[in-house]
Image 1: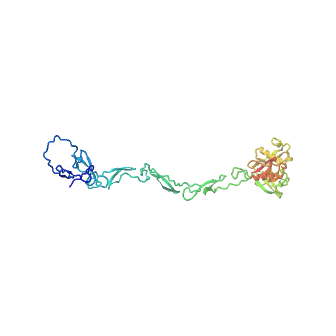
Image 2: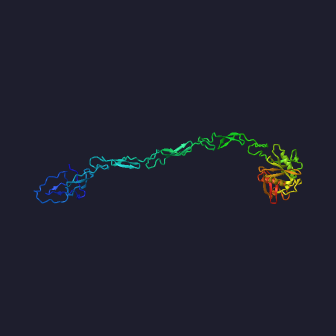
Length: 461
């Protein structure tokens, strides 16, 4: 069997095998069996040609130069590209290449891709080894990135742990989202049940609103009871209602005020005929249009006679017709004061001539109001009684009355009262009552100060 064919790639003659001749003219095989140099050729007796001479590098059987250490490519027996090395001046047999991972028999031993050492490989998670299989490097043992899991590890090998991991969660109150942190899902955003509060909401998420919520309550007087939450508010306190205020000098309704609500009472109309009518308490008062002083006295006495009225005085008549009048009664917060006629001669009054004969004049109610205001009250109504040495007035605190400035024109328009012309007219009573009621008060008396531009009236709260 012939040895592997040796081909000199670099000097191969174009067109086929380069045949060389022997020294005796015979043809020489272009191919030799490995180690076979053929029969010796007799070239005659040796001759002494002198010392040997260097003829250059040895040549192979094909005549190509071959020096020590030379190599050349060659085609191995299985058709792969191998190498041949220069041995004793001749290129030796073609050595097949080492096996490569290419699904071929590179080393011509009849086996494909055998004995190829594993090589290193890597992924983003680290290093490993892979092996050649059917011409391909396969099976890298490096850990492959995986989808991130909530386990406090870096599965996707991006140097972050448990990142961007969320999942749905729920409570009795509904759905939410929780986030992975250090291997555990935490922080569910769903609302958590809370103790039920009186707010119209289902705080404990049991599908009921404000259920079973009660609390203690008490009325203004401190009597205890229980109230129940209904539609977001505590209602229906079972404590008994506070008693109504009565005229007894006690704060019956526990609002911090004594006999309140009984301080200003308006009676309209009060008939002025029959038994017990206001005119019977002071016959000198003949009805609407009667003298101011005696009709004030009739009203005051009538108010004081009201059963349980808590009245100590009154103003009237503030409106009237021949059959009925309007009277404002004062409660126990009003203070009755006696005023000597001589007080009106002092500073701020300057009326030394004032005496009982002038009691029916509007000037006396005006100075009476001024006297009460100078003594710490809000307003005054009088004279409710009088004699030769003194008159009596009802001085009113601020919770009963207010001194209100109005224009004189308002009085004229309200009832035709022009106090600069005739202040004693009954129309001025009616005008003062009307302008006070127009301003939200319960009634009024006056005017108690006036000029042709401005006036002042007493308005009852």
